[in-house]
Length: 418
Image 1: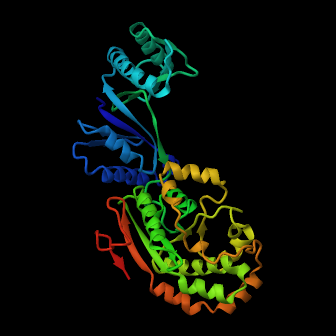
Image 2 (image 1 turned 180 degrees about the vertical axis):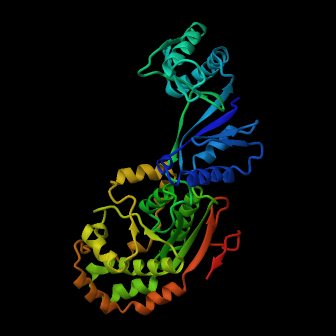
Image 3 (image 1 turned 90 degrees about the vertical axis):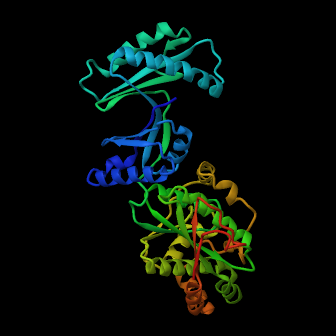
């Protein structure tokens, strides 16, 4: 049974002036997310955060840490006395236990396994050097475990010894954290949420940088269905687990009237460009009203006609609000890889079309000129329709703890704010 989990902080350690503030935020985030696990106790220093398990299920804690931004890595640890005998005795037991797991996971059934010892001698009162301590412990381990041999370059098993003033800790596994900055440390952003693969990934990457996220979605019934909206809801609920309180507000904009006007009055090749400009106008207006700092979207250069640099420039011309595009240089496989990791991919590929697929021309313009777009926009006379869409936008407060159904909005505690 493990004694504790040792947590290491992420790139926030580079922020020297704000380090104390970030440190407190990430520590509070961990405690807040673990508040249902009553046996846990906590202790922290400037560079480490210790979660003492006290018999609590460690897997529950690891599952929570997998959703906390601002963490570099974490390890299941055992604590021992700061002397060679105690360290070596515990090390032998831990390696024996881990060998079984390692062989099962790796399929390595070789007669012998390689290992090395790595020591971090933060406690300078312990005599010797880090290398010398590692060598001394290895000498005591080898005679006791006959199927081990030393390989300092590419070992199967690495025993880590962390000698610190607050205690001595041993571990054999390191789990990589999400990195980034603690939740809520980087201002507010509004994610333009389409329901495809890219926008949830963009939202996740913004959350990793400490952005407080809300989302906006454009619905065009009857051209888009409630199933399409439910897909967006489900994606937001997945993203919400990476937030501090497990909640994200989703704004649903009625977009049918605007799309219909564009379809009926404008040159078809400009449909997508005009639609996106209207979306940006609406999103920016709502964001400014709600004191949100930036818009965030899932655009990737050249992926579709509306994502050429020329198209982005013409669409951007409707606002001076900053637009963050976290996946702008990613190729599709890179985006899919992140989507699978954060478990949004299977939801994103549900076959329910969003408004971006409505009235799309066979050959949309890929290098629009602003003066031409303005002429087509004038034909559509969208000002009143945009104002009406903003006034009729609905807000749903979603969370990762209970499922929200668009088919039965009274079935849970989420609320509509008209």
